[in-house]
Each structure stands twice: as structure tokens, then as C-alpha cells.
Length: 149
Image 1 (cartoon, rainbow, N blue to C red):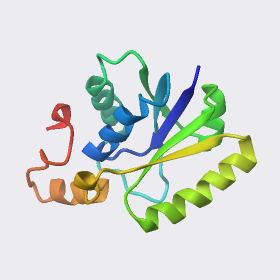
Image 2: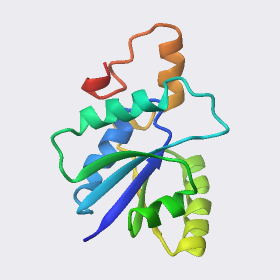
Image 3: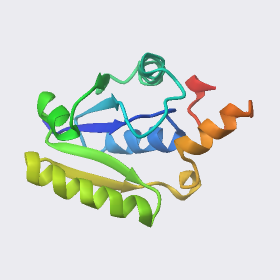
Image 4: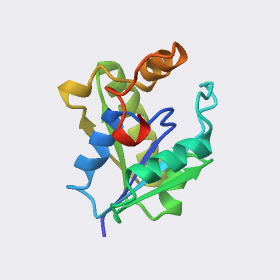
């Protein structure tokens, strides 16, 4: 069985994240979406709220599990016996960061990272953008899955 984790803070979960997970299902038998804490970011939405929201989005997809984790990503992968880390990249800056993380995760825990390029129609969407719009009480429905609107 090919199992991947899809880690992130998902504050909030965007259409870009959603698309990466759906495309990942073509590559993997199971995907575990791991909601982690990012100590460098101030949370906008409580982690339990994010967990519940993402679980609702994928409620009808038995190959997707959504969990919280509070460890190194490579340790999270080992905990769920995942051979792969699935990540999406929107731009060159994302690529540089993800490449470094992929090399570290491979060295630390022999876990491969699979990078999927974000589709062009979602490349401008980031959780930061959605949080900013949300903070000004703007409509974010064009940027998040239906269950989060």
C-alpha cells in the first residue's frame, strides 16, 4: 500500500490544498492529512475547528484520514507508516523551501517527498491571503472548498 501524509497548518484549508489532495489520490492508496502546529505563525482558526472542517470536506472519501500532529513531519510519517510526504508548490520560493525540507526528511527518516505543482488557477491562493480577506470580513468563497464557505 502506498501511503502519503499531506502535512500543513491549513489555516485555512484552501482550494489549492483540496486540489493537491484530490490529485494525490491518483498516486497513493491512502492520504493522511496532518494538521500541525506552526510555531512561527499566529493561528486564525482553532486547530480543532480546522480538523472538523477538513474531515467534513472528505467525509465521503474513505482513502483520506485527517488527524492532528505535534511532532517533526518525518516522525509523523513514521507514526502512520507513510512512505511519502505529499506537498504542493505554487512558486519558485515554495520550491526552494520544499526542496530543503525534502532533503532533510529523506536524510532523517528515509521518507520521499512528492511535489505537485499547483494548477495555475489556484497558484495565487494562499492561506495568508484567505486569512487577510477573512480578517476584513471579505467573501472568501472563491478560495476555499464549499464546506468552508
